[in-house]
Length: 108
Image 1: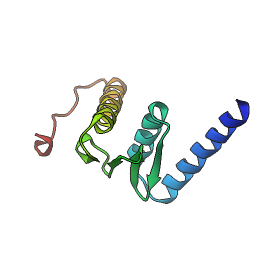
Image 2 (image 1 turned 120 degrees about the vertical axis):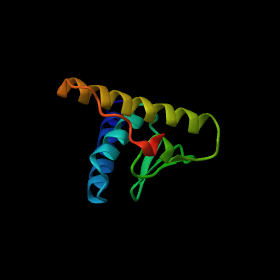
Image 3 (image 1 turned 60 degrees about the vertical axis):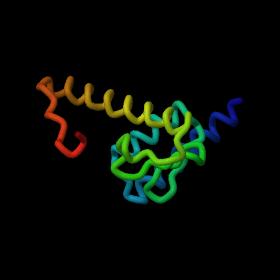
Image 4 (image 1 turned 180 degrees about the vertical axis):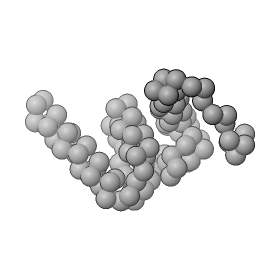
């Protein structure tokens, strides 16, 4: 039990080191960690996050960047990504305590 926990921690540090050396944005690294908490089967492939060998999330790591065959895996990953950015946004808002900026016309 303890050995596997140590191995997991080592793998997480390695994947984080890889992400940094690959030039992945901080948002990408944070998203990877968020997904990894829920779905252990996720890894880096260059700058893309690959989840369960089925879903690929490319930079800039938004919901619309989640690609894969339509199904429960893709839906599940999209929900995690959505929640991650919602939570990150609400934390930012609390730190600044000012109204969030309007969504850009691009995402409409």
